[in-house]
Length: 141
Image 1 (cartoon, helix red, strand yellow):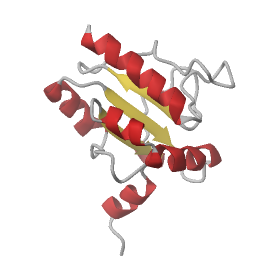
Image 2 (spheres, helix red, strand yellow; image 1 turned 90 degrees about the horizontal axis):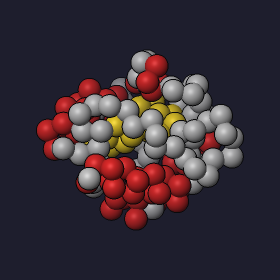
Image 3 (cartoon, helix red, strand yellow; image 1 turned 90 degrees about the vertical axis):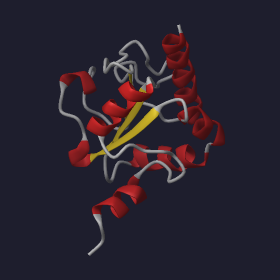
Image 4 (tube, one colour; image 1 turned 180 degrees about the vertical axis):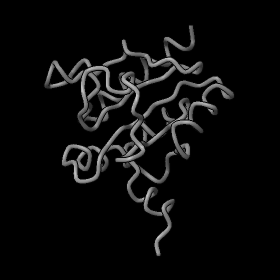
């Protein structure tokens, strides 16, 4: 039998990233390390997720930026159920940013999204990196 952790590693957006075990652990770590949290909410069989995973996993600049964040991957049943994690609906992938004290930074959205109704949908790592840099500026104030 294949371990759940092994399957989770395969489904993540890159093995080189330092992923927290889950959202609860990530939130605790973010508070302790005083870092913002970035959660990638995705689903098995999602074509947009699969496409983004490839670009995400190989982006060296994104990997460097991720060191300033606590990174969380939430797939399928791991998806958080609170309304704050689906502020404008349920679609995949959604990327949300959370302050070190646990508040969703709802003002951080993909400014270059194709669909104006899906503010937290990202299809390109360039847009993710722009949002990450915005979060860093907010947290560093």
